[in-house]
Image (cartoon, rainbow, N blue to C red; front, top):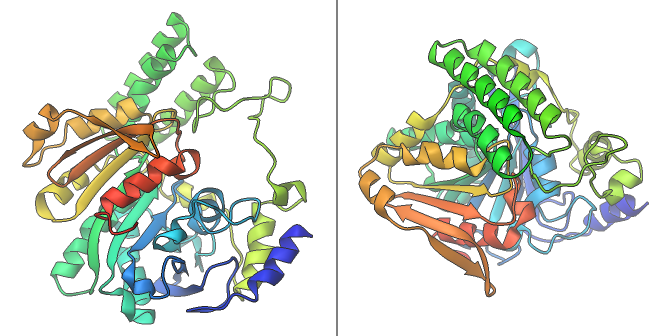
Length: 423
């Protein structure tokens, strides 16, 4: 009943664009990025000003691969409504325009006509995304001159790095008009092996492992390193899955996305507070297909498509650190990396490891520069370090989902990356 009430309320939204699902003015649509491949975008205009072009446009990309930005990023992390379908006090739409994209094709409301149209590598994902942006700007050309930033999470970071390089190159070639300014890589799967190699020491130091378990995990991680060194990418992905299983066996109940999350000892499942719409029997599929879909007058179903991951299995463990280096060496965009201290799947020690190895003009400055604490509303929320166009943020009291776990720190990062464009 409660969800139905909110849907009815959304019909009375008055503003810049069409009525959608939620309290903001919205616009949405599809772009055919290739024959048989169709990508969905959903724009939430900022509520900070009546003239939306006065504020940046921030794209949010979820991970997975196959995680839905329009569902998880929107309702669980930073959209105008939270997962209880209540207004979110710290929504990014309070400050910037937010564009959620179900990426790659086959994810969420994005769809393919045949599985053969799914992407199989990161470069294909990036090419599709440039076509998506071309279609978006054609629909809403007023955003071509608006500062554009891409923020992301997890595997979304791997995709964002390559998208950013391709977008910059497309702008330079005159194939797209966009005021592209920077990216924010959140807990991102940039160098998978660095994450795997640091799981054992991270868990050991946090008290989840004994010495024998530490040695076993460390040994298995090094086997993945060997597979990667020899170019056995599919086997490396399978070995990564086995390593995850070993972590679950040894560190009983540990949450890969936030190590402080409580776990039930009776059901051996993570303890999470019930969301209102889920307690009413409305799961993610029901929310998106029986509430969001009709509100947006969409034809195609939202789908939690496991095939997206399967088709990218060979690409999953490949690093994109070289792409990040190219962004720092060949472009003028800001590259910000941020990581939650309680994240395991992409732990901070692993992220720092690949960041410290980056080769760019300010590399020596990066190594020698001290990190400094930052505070929000008189409380320390993390640390930051910069050199040239690179910035890194250690986020306290946050796991994998930084926007949800520590919104104050996330807002600070959003301000810094957008050059304090928002207030």
